[in-house]
Image (cartoon, rainbow, N blue to C red):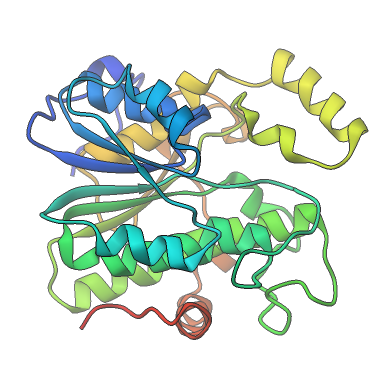
Length: 297
């Protein structure tokens, strides 16, 4: 395992010619930056997006081997269709797509939208594609999972009784980390060479912050994006690092500045809840029940 360098950047990416990488949510923000940088160093990048027209616009800057495929993580039928149409090996899956602190909504399958888009959709997609994956899985989490009191509400995981935009977001990001933890445990137990990793961008200025139903909150986010956030290019670095560098399975990468809000990639801090194997296994079993998708035997 290599140590994190002091100031790693996208200029340090290796040649990825011959590698195939799927990036979900690649039509904007961190996903678009990630796809462009991977394409720049030769990877065949598949942009898995809801809006294929926007995906096409990004793919134009991702090299000759980029392609766009439709995927809606808030609809398990779309997830199954994407996986069923996949042919051939897949080196890396980057579960990047997500929503943040949005007004209460439900997915096509009745899940709370943030849990469905940020966790259950990627859970199903990863397990359906896993027989094709040869290298690694990377899921994008958030240091919001470390906020005081954040946990998985197993009795009301879809927030039917008590919905709060930020609470639901934080729960979904904790779920991402527990998913990677249990996925790595299962891969290791199965003797698989595939590894699972998580990364978070710190506070990066993207359109993710624009989904709030509160006009005041959107105004505050606009100001903090301008004066406090780092660029989407910097925010994508931990994701790119986790997707391409030599790391142990189960690693978690994030910015190294104060509070992990900005800076170059390095080891990120997990909350005690995110390191709990019992929680990870319980969430996995519940996710299997909700999605109807299991770890491939």
